Image 1 (cartoon, rainbow, N blue to C red):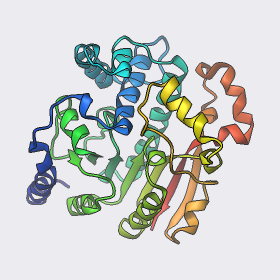
Image 2 (cartoon, rainbow, N blue to C red; image 1 turned 180 degrees about the horizontal axis):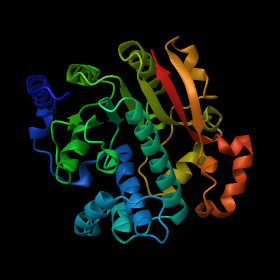
Image 3 (tube, rainbow, N blue to C red; image 1 turned 120 degrees about the vertical axis):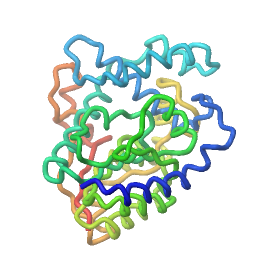
Image 4 (cartoon, helix red, strand yellow; image 1 turned 90 degrees about the vertical axis):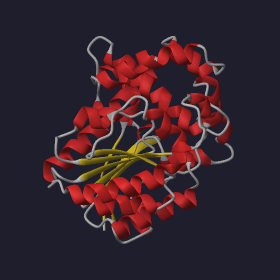
Length: 310
């Protein structure tokens, strides 16, 4: 139930945390780190798929934002920015990212069916527009990302007492206090294409803290198989990220797990509920790649894991 007093307190705390946004950062994606820039790629992928024939998902807000962004990116010195504005996004990549967005939307809706007034926390939200796609009119949504991303995103979305943007590193645990103080528990934490770019020890510690502080909540995140993170495989990953996708040098994978049960060994409050791979969708737009899903090696190269916490 909406409590205006609690809402004022939480809004004040978020304003204090977001004070860094008042520093002279320009509202331009040129300020983004290499990892943050991946959020533009996923935004354009959703917009392009939304406008395709027989779209996997409809994301009207993504289409609106990209149309507003195009003039800015067309004049950018960054090659990836110009490619996005020109509509040069790999069709297979757009399909994969749209399938992932749909699955995370489904996880969110299923959670809100059970907890209509719960909280949805989008870790490393980037330019995601999940609130606009799945809002049930009761839940509280928190979009969390670095200050340069949140400042930029504020130009394109409107906040409310149920939809807040938080400028913070996920490893600055003060943001968790805001979610707790809002009083809408339990929560579902979504990390869509985020953790693999972060330091492994810090990601493992984050899992444990979430399990301890949010009992009864859920965590859904995308992971990479750790067998692909060896020194032998690193050049291949860098080639994919930088040459094929045009990403910067820092946008490379660091964190991975051997299988979905591995995090259960980090804390007794972490329980694997289910796993999902792009190939599980059996969607016809996967084309010839769809057959690869029958091989576990390919199915769990990069996949999603879903945990109960606490």
